[in-house]
Length: 205
Image 1 (cartoon, helix red, strand yellow):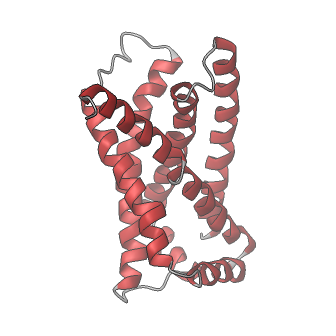
Image 2: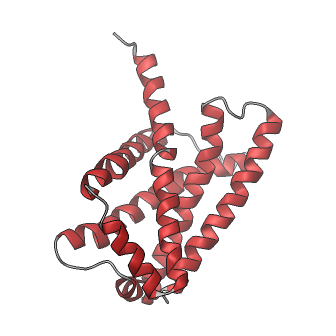
């Protein structure tokens, strides 16, 4: 029988892994899909229709997205509630990123949950049909646009900053030099992904 410590270690590892694979991969694919909006309504709608033809789509969504996503989110909240934030006393960058990782987690959870309801569940109920025109209606409202932009940036920050801690957790970047290089790489990725995500939103306006 596994000890509480070994069980906790295993869950932490699974939590870390779920944040990158498959949740992080899904984020990359979703931003790539949204980026087709830059090419106009026809390109975006064609991509949406292609995704809808995937076999056993609802099963894939549950196994590869919803279950890992909410496992990562719920366990992350448990960890967050035990965290002690001291950014006002120790103001160095890594401490702020530790704090922002927690803040971005809550923002991302609210944003993704609402996004799933607004487009995926509403579609299943026959209330909307995801399309370029539907996204135009949503983000035409400046408050919704701000909400989506904040959600995208928060999700990207949580993912890219999470990659930094993932490297340490899994023994990939243990030395100071490796961690310094990783911080630059993930920082550049954060800027690039955030810019692409916001640019896609602007395409709907």
